[in-house]
Length: 199
Image 1 (cartoon, one colour):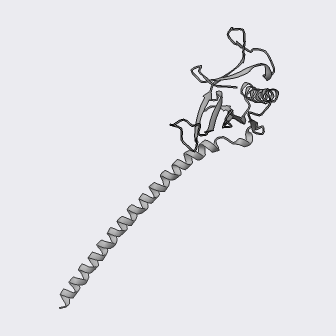
Image 2: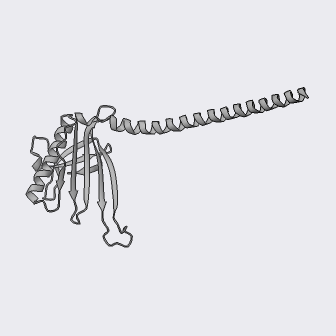
Image 3: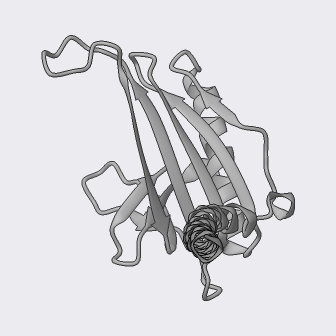
């Protein structure tokens, strides 16, 4: 009787050891899976953090945000837009870090907010990165969403031109002198020379 009992004990131990080793393997697989999942989440967060952390806003000149409602008188609007142009041109031309936020309102009262970053790219070439976001309301078109919607976009301007608009049918002229920002329009262009923003 004793050998049978020992055999049963051994087989029970073997089964327990096998079950234990299987559960350890499963536990190990689960730990590896958790580490991989956490790692991939951290990697995604790390990329996102690098993008925001690489831009230390304490180093950027930042005027107070500008707001340009429709009700703003024409003279005041021109003055505020000139300040915006002056800030962007000066910072880009003098290679100074800057961040500017400006919100324009449409006749319908819909805001479009632009955020401009004047900074060098990864190769050290100075540029103006822009992001914009707009809230559009329902305007009665059958295809328009009833509650309104958001649209957004971004651009990178690798060149900036100061243009004097001419109203006599001639082509606009690029400003070469030290004119005040009230006398020109700022045209931001991408690498292909396409206009991406005009202020």
